[in-house]
Each structure stands twice: as C-alpha cells, then as structure tokens.
Amino acid sequence: MGGIDFYPTTSSMGEMIDEKQLVSNVEVNDEEVNTKISASLPWSEVKKFESLAINSIGSEMKIDGFRPGKIPANIVRQKVSNAFIEDRMAREAITEGYQILIRRHELRGVGQPEVNITRLQPDENIEFSITIANFPTIELPDYKKIAADINKKPIETTATNKELEDGLDHLREQWDISEKYQELLQAADTDEQKQAINPSEIKVDKKDWPKLDDDFAKKIGGFESVGSFKESFKKNLEVNKERQEIEKRQAVIIEKIQEQSTIRVPSLV
Image (cartoon, rainbow, N blue to C red; front, side, top):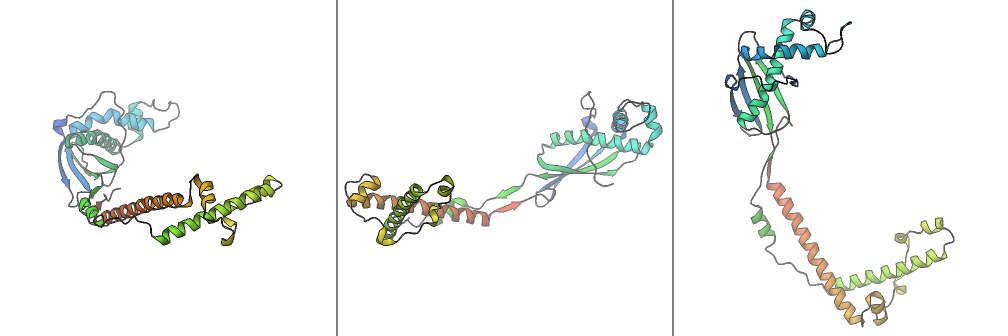
C-alpha cells in the first residue's frame, strides 16, 4: 500500500500493544546495509487505537462551532469514512509497534525508516514491513602493514649544503624586506598610506641583503659567531625536514588506507 509517515502516539496510558501478539521476523540484505522487519498484528490490537486515531483526526479538523481539538468523536465519524479511521488506527499501531520491534531486535539505524503496510483488512491481521538503514560499515585493510611498508625506509634528515645555502639566502632576503618595510612605514604620512604598503610586493636586490657575518648572527638571535648561527640554523632545517617527511608519509598512509577500504552506505540514507 506504499510508504507511510509515522504519527506520534499521544496516549498517556503507555504502550497499548500486547507484545506477544506482535509477530515479526528480521532479514538483512546481502550487503548488510539495510534491515527489513516483517510483522503482523491482530486486528484486536489495532482496535485499541481507535479512540487515539479519532482524537488525532479531530485535532486536524476545523468545524464551525467547535474549538480545535475539541470535536466530539461522533462528529468526526460523520465527517470521515471508516476506511480513513481504520487507516489512521493502523498507522498509530505501527508507530508504537515500531518502537517495540526496535527494542526486541536490538536494532540501531540512521535516518527515517521506510514503512509499508502490505495488508490492511478490517477484522483480519494487518501486515507491514519496516526497512531500517543500518549504520554505514567500514572494512579497513591491514593498516599496520601499510604503515610498516611505507615507514620501512629510514628518514633522511641531513640538510645538504644546497639546502643550507638556499635557507640562509631566504632568511637574508626576508630580513632585507623587513627592513625596507619598516623604512616605508616610517616615511608614510597617513594611516591610509601605511595600510597600502604590502610587504609581499617589496622587491630587494641580492647585493643589498645583509652580509652573513658575526654582526648579522648577533642581530638575528644573539649568536656569538656566524659559525654557531649556521650550526643552529642547520639543526632547525633538519628538524623541519624530518617533520615534513613524517607528514608526507602520514598522508600517503591515509591515502592507501582509503583506497583499500570498503565503505557500505545504506540506500535509504
């Protein structure tokens, strides 16, 4: 009879269904992404929801002379067909039955379940099915082996002479740019002119870079000599080089794990 929406049960009497009368069986599809519950309930259990269904229908009606939610049951019966009331009774019963079935079969799902009434005939058992989207499952590969294979090769952290030379050149260039930037700020007359100065647009000539000598070493960090500064600078380069290699390997490990993982996502989600 097609999918239905749940109607919130507003009874203050607790559960009205006799659980023993609610017959059900569970089947999980081949890929284990959806669980389907097939169930049946005697009409005598559905009849327990007659008053609740009529009150629910009445709360949605607008009739002159009656306040919303205060329409008598006999008036509601006059305005709607028995089939409409029976359909609402079934929906109310299924709403409560759903909670019982979830608890009975210890199911955990995501999203809105798909509910279908497959048989609705007064004075006979109603039959319905509920399909629940299971939580997505992820099958991981042997990630420890992946990590071990990638980390098998030792990390080369020693800074080469070229890396050291390039790093020192970059530092001297940035130092010169910083000094030029400060000079431009001091020469600016207004805040607007200062804000218009962009350090990234400042061009400097290599011949103007500070000389790599003891004086520069003292300025840059209080080193006693250019030799001690270079030694410290090289150690920092090697620390950064190791960190970058570790981050690179971690990214490769994650990529390999993602490529070899299997993710099953329910069709209802």
